[in-house]
Length: 281
Image (spheres, rainbow, N blue to C red):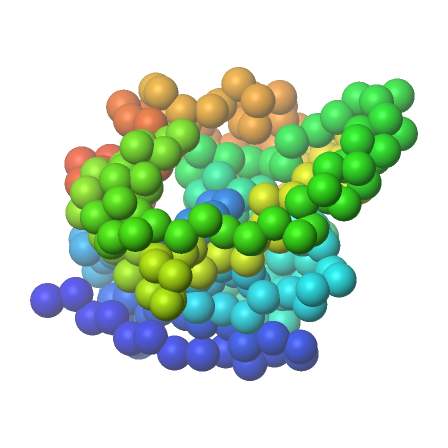
């Protein structure tokens, strides 16, 4: 039986919800989920852990964690600040990180900024934030301001039934199995008088005002000193968020696997990934 404990981590300004999987005395590994997912994203991977203490957190604005203040946008670098505070709260001076998609980008940025605090990296279907050509940034900034002003008063449309929400998650941009959808919705769905709504902060859908350029991202990747395992799915998103940066790593092992963007929620790939993580113990 998989050991699973839910708990809260208190950092300056926020309460972070978390799940601890596996051996409480095992090697600590912190897991970071993707955009609009939550800590349950790693439940399938955790089934095969041995001597691993996996701490999966709901990023701010996701799952059961606090949201950012109404006037505060969501920027990926703020997640790096939150991660630093989480590790301090857990008294983890040096740790291995597993990240999926946006979570992989956060893990890489943290490893680039604090190379002395990261033992190992596993980056699943992600590596770095999207980059933009520098000459495009002024227009992208203007477009984002206009779009954000239009979106600020919008509210989430509720689902009338739980099954409707399940089907929406199963058939999203990156499809998942029903079992995976149910695991994610346990933390990602709230029942209200109007119906079922996502518990994620609606502001997560707003475009960023400030974005990274290619050279800025490259400087972070080049600063990473831990060994990195980069996982690419056969039906994933490697072209835009993984491949441009592989040559900048100090040391990276690339593993191509059958599966989509959420391959870590599929039993066979998840077992293979867990076997690699077990080697860290």
